Image 1 (cartoon, rainbow, N blue to C red):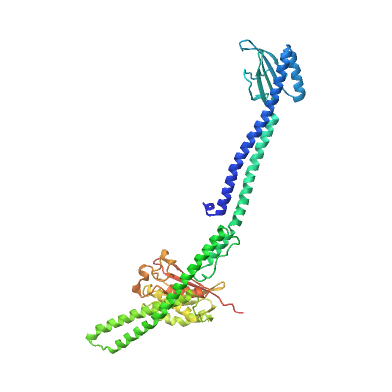
Image 2 (cartoon, rainbow, N blue to C red):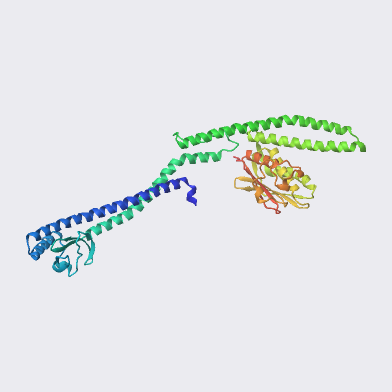
Length: 461
């Protein structure tokens, strides 16, 4: 569920849920307590009146007179009272009704040997009654409790309205408090997303308080520091290794070329000549790998030397068209140049030319004979877009996001047998990124590929 992805909502929901349980228990206890207090007060009043009536009956044998006086006195106080006196025989059996309140209209009240109380329905209203048994009478007195029931009903409505409103307010306040409390984490998350291998010097913003979040940020900053040290060490090692390997490889290639020139075309030296030529090819391949690693290492450490100047991409593509046609001639592939808009960018013309040629060379490698490659230049808003489109074997979806990784080869299409090192697209990605641009690919298996290079247009005043 989406809400489970947000700690803010989880905290707010937990607080609201806890409060809901507490409020529910509190309202139930309050309601029961108030209800018991109100009815207990009525019961105590009825008990005093019953005791008073019993004492009167003990002093005055005229039951009817005493009952009528008690009834009229009670009516004067309570407006409405229900009284019933029933004779009791020696064996406890009920006798005739001696007195009943006129307001009962013939309705009988409960009687009991034990003193009991309860609520009954009398004349379409709730009434609270109390029973009492003496040696000669069963007496029951009751009073309406509609006002109490109305008060309890109003209390239930109040609770039913107040509790949900309180929970909604608690949810909003809890979410606000949680959001404010987690804001340092949001800031740290945003900063962490900006940190890449290119800017490991940056750190997450440290909160003012040294609380749990502050200690987490300090730990992450320490981890980033260790990563920066490790990355710098690896980059420095790659740069030094590439630099140290270039000279011996160049010397080795020179020595083999000298030996190759010494050999003649005799059959007995042909095998040796072929072996040396093969070794020279492998050394050339190693030199290319070393140069590529050196370029990537400098790009990672932001030490890539770019000769930036204004470059007209249309003119640049026109100049490299001949080289692209030479690359494609071996497979009789046609190279079409489609310049829809002239675009001026700030960049290194030599590196941009090399990138377009490298991608074009890849397109030639993986395109069928007699097909067509289109190099297109367009303007899109404030960007120049260079597209290299082929009708080759294409790239499967699972490989599209990985082909710009170093030494990555998409199965046979990127195998070493094709002569690639697996670094060309990684270098293109780094150089384009150094130009504040992007490079991506649109492709599908057996449907060709479209490499799209986007560069910001030069702002000419």
